[in-house]
Image (cartoon, rainbow, N blue to C red):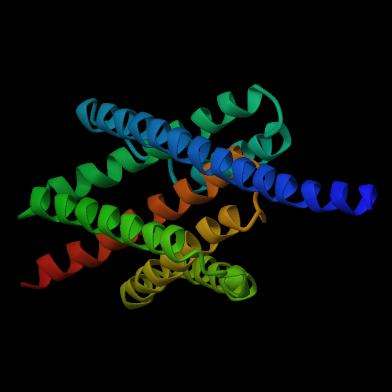
Length: 226
């Protein structure tokens, strides 16, 4: 009898601890995400103000994957936070010359602001939906992984072979894929699939970054066609 009572009491406590742990990951993720977004925005603004050149595709890929690897390795230590800011700051720097390019186009300021507003609306809407409904979007994992890989390779092909139509198609695909990634990762945090807020932050930051640049390219093309 005593053993049964002990088990009955322990089960709710375990569930409560699980909920508290999940809420802690969510809170820390959004706090760190906000800080990294502000830091990336500052580095991007600095690159725009100083009119810094884009580092180029090779340096960008090496810097991104190198810092991503370091962040993954250091995710359970204090150095993981340093690596996160190094990664997001570097991505912000690479974004600066891209924003400068669009600001130099007719209605460029409006294009950039619309892309920012669209990115914010999509992120808040999708993450809010996942948080409120608590639906499990883990089934999207395999599709997203394959889709992102295919879109990434297609994007490289569009750059090397200079195919504007393919580049636009890749941007449209990335808008959908990054929207799915926001749903997937938010759901992953809620249901305990991701318990490390450093990696959760990186995933959501990359989704927001790619969503913004993809919207920027699509809106820039539409404005140039008017």
